[in-house]
Image (cartoon, rainbow, N blue to C red; front, top):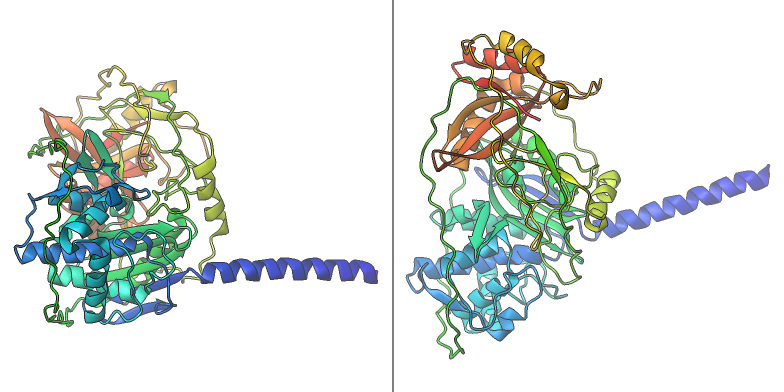
Length: 553
């Protein structure tokens, strides 16, 4: 008997010790910091002044000095940057340009914001500072001027360096400086897709599409740092800046950020009392370097598509399309010195590992509607999402499996991972005109829902699963079509705020589509069953919100 008790006690101590070791390892990288940008008050501070590795958050300072040089007129957006051998030799993430290739300053900024391209960050640093080493001196001078006493830079990219450190508090300070000092350039941080050289690159910061009100700004990853994120949130008149360091995966990092921002919004002020600080000029201001570099013929810039307004929409058009299964190539795991690794799985459902696919156009996740004022928010416990970490990590190494992609007329399933850097181009499928239910006025939404149920065939019937509630159905409520994704997201956010409890916990999406040769973005709330979709749209119409019901796969 005593032996059995002793064995159980020993096993418990071993498990307890392993748990402590794991927690200590996480604490060595983890930090969280939430700042009320309206007042400057610190709302949440968890190891906010402890030294951490910034990874690609370093590029925030690289871009600050770039914006400063642009503002003084010593650099222009149309100026071309030549890639040096040193820049081309940088480890991923990168655009992979060759020595002698050129890129405009504007495209360089977008490549750093979205792709987090290390080669472009170094090339920009050499353009401004003459060398990356000298540029790092300018970065450190700026950090000292901002009072970022816990920050030291050794390079412009954030690639691993033991001496390159910062704090969550310092990164929040830098995020505010970027917004205060360069309101004309800060919108670059909300760039969602960057097209260059015939390829399109999604922003690694997927919270731009999954949490209403996020307007930037930067992600970062190395093995030493874990998954880092600095973000800015505007909700109504409230403005928060959040920092999370040391996430085990991108999904768990983003989940922690969402929970913190949701909790702190209730404590945020609507009154802006914080005054932006004036900053004296640097003694050695950034100057454009004049260095002889071997040049090669310039690579042609990819033309940027012009989006024109065409938001005309047929009032009531309810249809379905058939999905075609395809397989894609899984993204290779990143090396130890890779910065800013892309998200490896869907954030809304991290228990399902999904390899990245290309789907254009498709759903762009915008986030979950926030609960109405007065709704209770669960308190945040110490963040240790082991189940999320294991699932998201598996998505990096798991072999690809067949996914579904719908024809370009209607969106695919909502949870999509970011695009890989290189992938096999999926084949387009022939588009068939979807069936349309006609002959009913828009206000008869209940009848429309019943008609949809009668008109559906077995191929499009949802599974009879008792767990499939209003937030797991295949019907959507569309509130309009817009000429830009930002307009669509603003409309969704406004309706969420007005509707309150009606849309609590409901997912919202923007669906890109082409109409009369023009790009439009359809704003929808999704995940309803037929009856809930009809009743929700009726309730929205009583609040003067025009809408109609859509049925999808």
